[in-house]
Amino acid sequence: MELLKSETLKNLARAYVGESCARNRYDMMAFLAKKDELTCLSKMIKEVATNEFHHARMLFSFIDSADTKHTIDNITVSAGYPFKQKIGTLEENLRLAVEDEQNEAHKIYPEFAQVAKKEGFNDIANLFLNLVQVETCHSKLFQILYDQMKNGTMYKLPNLVKWKCKDCGYEETLKEAWQKCPICMAPQGHVMLHINDGAK
Image (tube, rainbow, N blue to C red; front, top):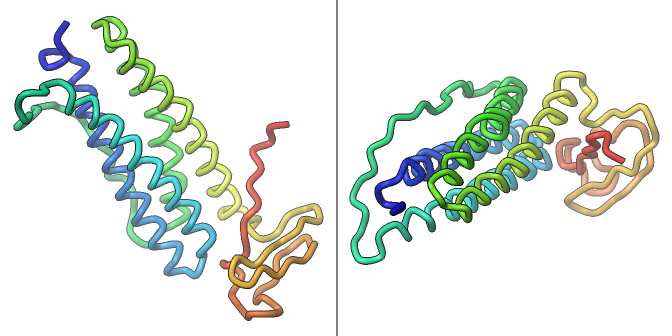
């Protein structure tokens, strides 16, 4: 089957727009975190936004290859995209990000991979399946961050851990990170986070 006339091309376009929207949502979440002086959290969210940019780039490369002689002026697709995030509610946005990432990982991309494989586009099917793995990791990360924020454990853990200031590098082993760095006086949000998904 020719990619230009396939359902897979439409799915690539849907996924491209979805990844582009996710990147913008996460950039807005990172902005909220930075505004709240949670700079290490902001950086983690920005890294996920960068991942989404690269997903969009890879999807776009397949779209671009569908017609090597002409530009593709328009791809008409019908799709729903989440607009659940709320401006100013970082904790809730983390929870909603978990849902969005799970939807991509467990429903959207497996279905897109199945269609691509059926239409004979194994390389595109493999891309969608690889994205399932990454979006699953994103979902787990956002779940951990949401739980930590909700439970007040982002900077307070039951065991002794080494906390590190991202600005000056000061380190100390404590159960709870300092409110202000003893050296550079950076606020607690500049302390590097501990992420543990329970995997051994």
